[in-house]
Image 1 (spheres, one colour):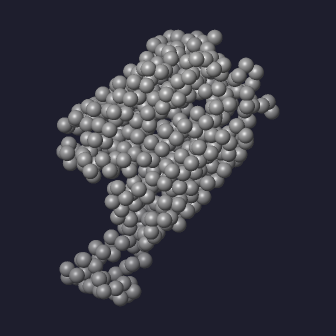
Image 2 (cartoon, helix red, strand yellow):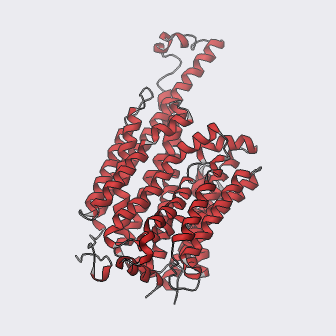
Length: 524
């Protein structure tokens, strides 16, 4: 029996080491929230960084891209590192490295310095989320897994939701550098708790499949670059984007063929792909990441760009989404043991679809109540979806495979978020342009109805008044076109959410507990 399996068995039996279960949970969740916050907390500070570091609009996006690419490449390596050095050591090194990298980000005085520091942040932070999930799965008995996944889900979901609010407040009241300095006390407390209370656990040591790691890393890195830079470079009109797309497909093809044909150890354990619930859970993790993060990417620009909301107020009106997620996760942690997880997830997807339908009713004259209500309902939907998803995904997976399964689960969620953000941003740009052209066609120079507006009375002439009037008309047409583009995006995500519900039938209903304390699936 592997060390991980032994730890899980000891946990179920109630070993003395588990008297610190609460402190272990608190410590690892501090590290998880710290990493999760950094996925979005820097977004609102980008304009301030751009001026301070004298960077162009294209250059400043590397503050986000470098972190995403480094994290995506390092994430699949988590399982092998745990087998080589032990989970506790990997956890401690990750926390220390992430905290130091955060300080370097805050001290950066140029673009190369902050990009390098963000690369380090991504490398060291990649392991924090999957390791925290694996630890919670191991230190809790089967009947407490639902509540444990509720705590873990709250950390990784609420972190990105509260990130813009906290980032906006820190930037407005202090400086953009405090967006990174805020991690220092959190990292110190997390390191102390993990070093003091978390016991060592080492899965079975395996050799590193170098070819598999290199091809998967190349595929992930090229995919992230393709998604992050595609909109800036007009997608396949750019040779860079074409090369990145070709490299992604080729690298992934080599990885897939190698994984299925290699004799001996492969970088991705093939036993993971034989578990139906795990594979299905990866699909839903991709979809949930896509829906959640795509919405989060759209709302701040909608509220600040079209509605004219300040940064801090934008964070305030979007914060109820986090409240809804917290409430749902508190409730669903208890429901998982009593009801079919597929039914709970169906409710969650239904609430999410309803909230997206509400967003399609937004106007430029509305108050903030619709934003608050739709965000709160969407938070409930995400909470009712993510906790049972996490429980069902790992319900039938052998404990010794969790150290490999949790990074893959987090990886698919991250890729889903990148794909979702790229899709909605591309559709927004295209939809806004099309809507602008359609609206502009209804306001030709001979439209006499416009002349009744005092501010536009000179639009039909040739003097300065005419230029001012035409500029005002074009500005309003642009705003209305952008609104239509946003509403179309919300509608598309609503349809994707509704089409996902029938796929829940692919998940096998897990038993509450099989013989020997390990969950198992109900045969069909």
